Each structure stands twice: as structure tokens, then as C-alpha cells.
Image 1 (cartoon, rainbow, N blue to C red):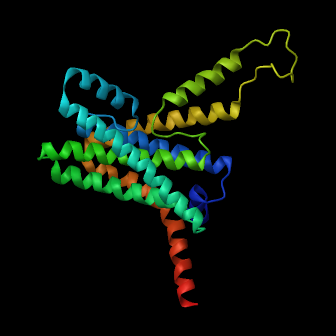
Image 2: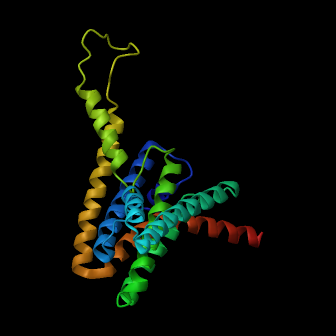
Image 3: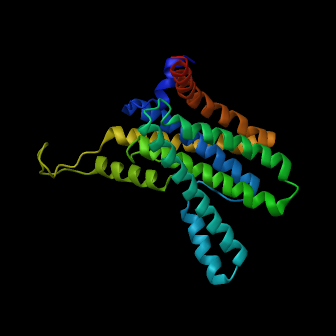
Length: 253
């Protein structure tokens, strides 16, 4: 894959096409990590709705251990999102080429850690499950905050509720009969086909990633995280390498 093409995924100069390509790739990674994580720990980690609901349920039922687990998952997701914001804002202030690549690099490293944790801690269930759940929630928060900032809140990749809602809205617009309403007036209803195609592609890639992640984890175990980390390293490695080369040149001068 050409180096210049890889740069476009996380380049500071954004276009709709580059946002769509990155969003689809990250939706695939999120779907795979979410499905593989479920097979590993029996819990989905990419969306907080169910986790917050389980926190409320278990609080009423008096299940303190589950309440603490859910609270820890939410805290890990928040910490991941906050970390992504810190890295991106730091990169902007320092005019780095790797503004958006740094969170992806960290995500790749953490996915590899997830694989290592699974290989080494699976026998120790007391430590294994809380650690891996928190790690995956952190990763999902990190990724979702990055793509949210890079796309100005148009794209989400770790949970599909909003996307499915937006798809339904645009489908409803496309089916609406503008009887007696001339084209071009403010009340004329028209679907945004660009958004519909974007949201549908994100949903499709998340589903494809989920299928691939579930199959990979079932067949190969935790080593299935390696291809996901490799994809992220491909996107992040070139801009980070550009910044490191720039620092070396400055040091020499």
C-alpha cells in the first residue's frame, strides 16, 4: 500500500473521503474487538448503554461486585476518551503531523496487550476478566473520541444505536411524499444520500468486523488481535515516523 495513501487516513487535513475511509476501517476494528471481547469475557465493551443499565439493575439488586465492575467499565471508557482528547489537543498545539495517529498507535499497543493478557491471565479469572474488560472499554473510548473529533461528531464507530437511528431518519425522508410542496422550498423533505451511504457503510463494516472477530477468536484465540493491531499500526506508523524524522532533522540543525 503506497505510503502517501496511508498518510491520508490520519492526515491533519481532512476530507469527507478520508473521514469515510478511516471511519469504515475503525468500525471494522471496533466490531471485531467487541465480538472477540465478548467471546473472551462474556461482555460487550463498545457501548455504554447496556453497561450503565446493568449498573442500575445490580445496584437495586444489591450485587455490589457487578456494580463495581460496571462502574469500572464506564470509568475506563471515560478515561480512554479523555486520553484521546489530551493526545489530539497536544498534537494540535505542537503542530504535529501525527495529531490523529497517536491515539491509534496507543490503541494498537493496547490491543496487543489484550492478546498478551488473554494468553497469560486466562487461568486467573479473578484478575483476568476485570482487567480485560477495563482494557477493552478504554480502547473503545479512545477510538470513539478520536473519530468523533476528527469528523466533527458526524461519525461514530464503537456503537451502532445512533447510526441505525440516523439511517432510519434518512430512509424516512426518502420515503416521504412531498405532495403539493414544490422543490426548493424550506419545507421540502429530501434525504441526504451522502449521509445515508456513509452510515450504511459504517454499519456494514461494524457487522463485518464482528463476524471476522468472532470467527478469528473462535478459531485462533487471542492471536486474532494481531491483525487488528497491524491495521492500526499501518495507519499510525507513517505520520508518527514523519514526526520523528522531523525531530531528528531539527536536532541536527
